[in-house]
Image 1 (cartoon, helix red, strand yellow):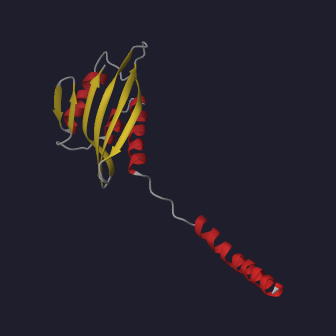
Image 2: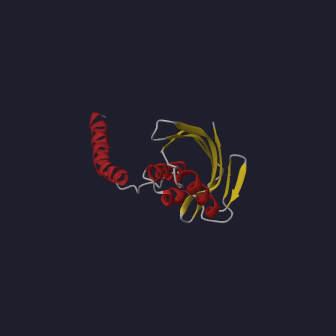
Image 3: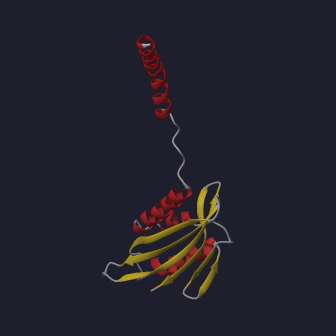
Amino acid sequence: MKKKIEMKLISLGLLWLLIAPVAIAQTQNKPVQPKSGEAEIRAVLDAQVAAWNAGKLEEFMDGYWRSPDLTFFSGGRKLSGWDATIERYRKTYQAEGKEMGKLAFSDLDIQPLGGRAAVVRGRFELTMSDGKKLSGLYTLIFRRFRQGWKIVHDHTSSS
């Protein structure tokens, strides 16, 4: 009886020695999982902040859907299209005597709407060179396209 138990233990030990390296190798060779939609959207917003703070408005606009169907609501006005949206930004922040300031986003709330869309709510703050701060809330609708996540609707209100 004692020999049977010893043989079973030895067999289990040998089996474990054979299986363990395979199991370890499988966990080490797992493919990297793609970013979640939320992580990809955060990356778009982070890239927008970096571009804005570098004074690169066109790069900031890469986060928006380059389409005449893009909508932008702010200050009681409705704009349609990427071209109208970038022109508004240029007039507001890059015209003579204007500045872009330093942008920060906070209080992000990303809610997926299936696998191809999401609603993003948050707060923005612009700090100007004189220390003045402009802030407000925004709601963005993102859609996933072949080239990645893009803002298809932006509703921004200032405090």
